[in-house]
Amino acid sequence: DMDKPGGSTFQGDWMKLNDKFEKDGRYKTPLSFLYSRIAILVVAVVGMITMIHLYCATASCISFVVGCACMAGIWQQAGFLMHDTMHNHILHNRKGDQRLGFIFGNVFLGVSGRWWRDEHNE
Image (cartoon, helix red, strand yellow):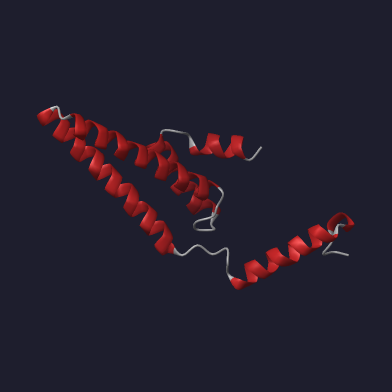
């Protein structure tokens, strides 16, 4: 059967389920999701910059720690967004997703998105 690669019932059932999910639109990512993740990234960047200025003005230990937490948030969100865009899971358009992956990876995370994709998908 065509729906059973290698004659495996499990693979055939998996392919049917995958086809159903795709038909139902379960793999489509709403742009509101992307916008919400970008908003979190922007808030973290603004927070980090604010804490840098506050630390330079006051040498406050709290502003240093909060700035570090903001930087960790930037790296986490950028890594998450790079991962999903390099798998083409956000726009579902290879060119658009890889451009976003470049921005999130190379600019915000400091990791080559292309290198990550090539190494991760091996």
